[in-house]
Length: 173
Image (cartoon, rainbow, N blue to C red; front, side, top):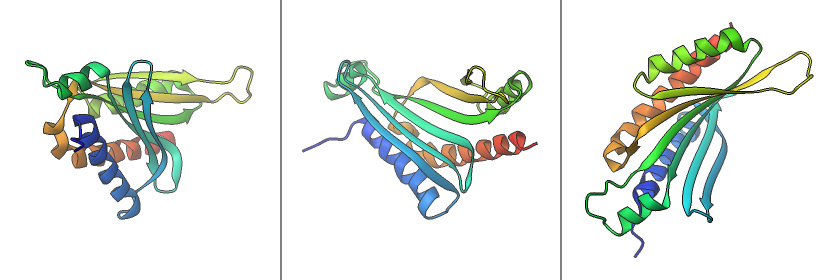
């Protein structure tokens, strides 16, 4: 019989809650879903992308990943191992003035997750006029997450949606 791993259980927890926020609460809209198995290194990655209902200006993503080492430690019940996954949140938006807007975006994310590492990537098309910049802000949870955090998923999803709302309000100023 199939015994779900920590990764599988957390993935289902995020899926259930975020799809409920889409289908039942109609607060968000799921815009993309990826469930990858990287055969070269046997790692897994799950990405669920969404936006606020009918507001495509700001996107959010929950990224859950697990390596072969983490999976093997769990399946083999390696003594002293603490099986888990990595969690990352991503927020995307288009800005016109990254020099002023990116520090404000960082501030919003650091206020929301002060203990986590935040970084931003900027992508733009050379020679495009007027210049716009696609900013992706990443919040990395540098510790392993496991089933002990299952109860935190609803609160985390609510918090993500609230941060997306703050980013949307900031971006529309």
